[in-house]
Image 1 (cartoon, one colour):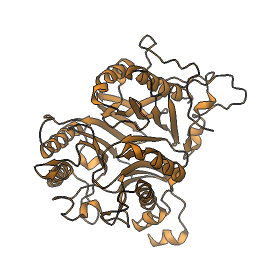
Image 2 (cartoon, rainbow, N blue to C red):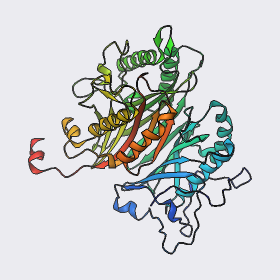
Image 3 (spheres, rainbow, N blue to C red):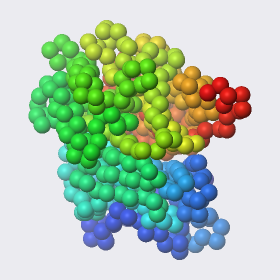
Image 4 (cartoon, rainbow, N blue to C red):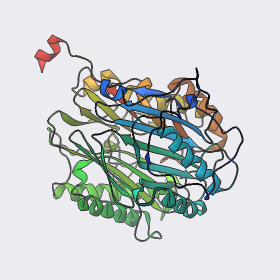
Length: 469
């Protein structure tokens, strides 16, 4: 059954409606069969009793969604996490579309039998001009429980003024703290996650290198404020205006990479970077993607824990040269990120997949062909998260399939490529919460980039493999 649904009478909410709180209180009498999750993952036995969804049979409630939506429910042992992708109807002004999106998030979360809290959201917008009214709208809605929010000037491919990717969490063990307008702390089951969103340069008119210096320095400061450092960073997102534009004959992306490398080297000297057992620096998973304008925005996610069954596993793709080993022909100082970061927690694995494109070894392939580039990009993701690749990295019984993805973002360079790219994604991924946004990729010859996150479970190891450890 499709999870896409629209309000039958076409009405949109207005500012005269009641304020919608961050927490969604369940009401079992209002379960809409059209809001079942597109995926239910892991299915922990304790959480199964917390997450329930209605069915069409015997349900008299009419369709109640204003926006297209799809979401995944990840059922961990003590908490439920929900990943939502929301795209309002491409009509009405930005405030109308914003209310549609917020109302849809609230309606979806009310289908769960426990209170849910929105912890982070990425808002993809058609232009910088719509950010201010949306900020006011979100602030009026969430008040002092504002999720870590980042506005990204990447027009949704469907023509909407905005699209929202949001994460929410619920459960008796979940403790969510809103520490500042863009910093949110989440603790459960001995794990402490922190989301820091939308860090901007102090001087938005500075050159690319200086902008990158400023956002990484500011991120270091904000992490220190919550007792964290880059040693704890699992995932970063870098949004760069004019990413492939020249700046004194050097691409802005290359200058950003130079600043990131200099920053990480300085952090290593301060013992603030994670080091592998082989003595190599471990870089977080990351996406470096273009957006409209000339500014830079940095987001990060950290994890701290004292549990001895938790480990971070940076993954590289055997079909691709590691980005940090690229030759100087690509950048004076190579991009410093891992192709993916797997967070192994007991018997479960969460794999954060970096921005991935049509690259084999270190070269762009299928130049000018959106369909072949999309296929190659998905092949690269499939190889990266495979059980064979996890085993290659020393973890047996782990790994994921494309069906284990909870959500993806697809960045498309040219609007005219949207339908072709989407058709391939839908065929390869199957039903999957997805946002399609228009954005320049970090190389001028790349037409598409995809990132995502997969949730999987470690299969029981054989006696022979256990004896080899």
